[in-house]
Image (spheres, rainbow, N blue to C red):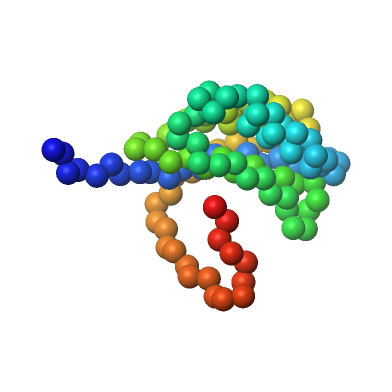
Length: 119
């Protein structure tokens, strides 16, 4: 029996979009919904943890999509899924697509009465 533990690396793809006009967030919802429903669960990448979209709090034309991954080895390349999302958004404005590897993490306990953890 092998007692060695698998070391999971966490990494993230960040796709930032700056549009000349306000971003219609429904477009992003439709895009992400199509990705999650058009592929059967077996077609989605094994190491995909989740996808989250954010809008800038002050600049309404800025959008950021974060694709969270967890695997035994971090990726140094953009995923086919990330490239697919980038391609769909490319004509809307300036796009930056990058890969980041987690180096340090600290868990913070939430105080009672504040927002609960999101799974």
